[in-house]
Amino acid sequence: MRFVEKVTTSVSDDSDCLTRPMPDPGDFRHDYTEPSLWASLWNTVFNRVAGALLLVLTLPAILVLALAVKIINPGPVFYMGTRLGQNRVPFYMYKFRTLDTGIQKKIGAKMLSEKKQEIQPFLKLMRDTRLDELPQFYNVVKGEMALVGPRPVRPELYENVCSDLPGYDIRFLVRPGLVGFSQLFTPHGTPKRIRSLIDARLATTQRNILWDMAIIVYTGLTLLRSLASKSWSLLSTRLLLRLRHGRPADERGHHRIRIKNAVVFVAPADDENGISGNGQDYEHVGNLKDCTDTHFRFRSHAILERDTIHKFRLQRILSRRKGVSRKRAHCTGRIFRRVDSPDPEQKHDYIIEYFVENPFQQYLMDKYFLDKSIA
Image (cartoon, rainbow, N blue to C red; front, side):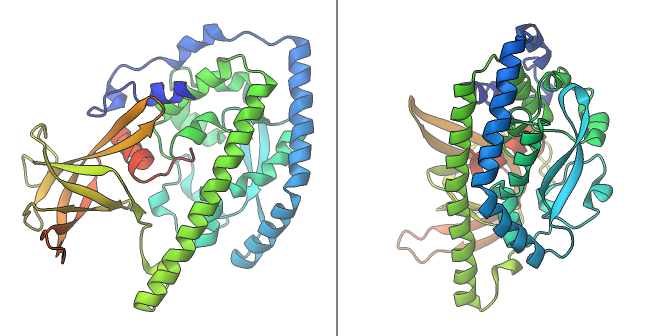
């Protein structure tokens, strides 16, 4: 797990990781050794037996979720999509259908952007907590997937986006997994180059059954905690908006993430669009309060004019076993609104409409300020 933290912080937060040197996933190929026949057989037996046991244990939840999906989302309960398995052999992967039928034909070889998803809140909760993946225990029992391994990829996405990434094909040395290491520790939308690096390392690491069991238990506990947290957030938000405004939460465009131990720095942009400029002269202006996919709010003594463009650096302090860690993300933003605060210090609340300028900064926003990573 420390490897993931090392990979995702090996590039400066102030730069675009796609234009800076990174480790080549292909370098891990020489670390891979073909498992012995006995080890391969034992691993297969373990995955199938453990997959069958977990399928039986989760069967009541699967039945309840199937009924809920049928009521909320008319049409087939399950989605069956083609994925590439070990040695690029195609197979059908199962999951609960949380999107409209025919969505795969619409998006083709593109990744489905979360900002463009229009999903009923309960179905979104299933996607965010990975409950929609429970039917894939059946794929594990069939031997098409393992419990832990790189997540399976759609053929069209591989051919059009991923096939040219250095070392990406290393993932096909092993069976795809129900629990994907890169998907567990990085948000949806993380640059493929970073995820490829993590998956390549996982695929070439000699693991034992105890290691896989530890990852499965850790994932299960993490998802249960995420389910409890997101369920409470969904229910409390909808109830609060109903009590305050007499309207459902569905009318709010984006979910608001409240953030602790985070501050905001600002620097002037060089042109009216805020796209050029180095943004090196940052000054601390206030404390970050909450953030959505399109806006963030901070509280400050500073006086900033509405509709002006600035460079912003968000910084969050996280507690680690070895001390504290500072995580930063850069963006360009427009002063969308200023709300005078009634507190005696006469601070102001600023609403900033922001955009990020490269995929790596989007990854940093998603992981550390929007809490989109599972773990």
